[in-house]
Length: 86
Image 1 (cartoon, rainbow, N blue to C red):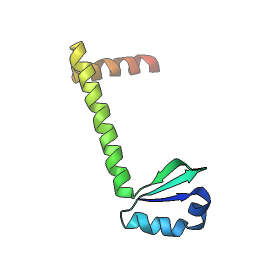
Image 2: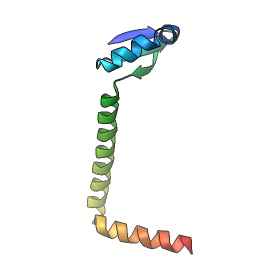
Image 3: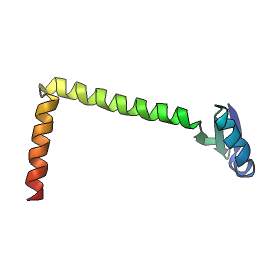
Image 4: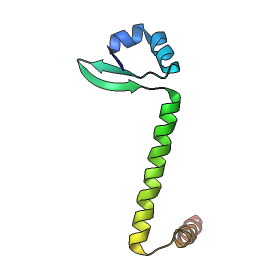
């Protein structure tokens, strides 16, 4: 993984884009501290999928602890939304 400063990233943005196309990541630092990572788009999509999966898993665990089913939660949520519109 390549590391560069913010000013280098501005100068070499096309190189960073090429690295991302080649499935490489680049860490950009400001004053020696990492501030962002530029990653290939497919890696970003994979991270987003994982984030959503973990959120659903956490919600599933919460529902399991309450004894409430997803269907019941959906029905109650719809009732509240319809009530709020009126």
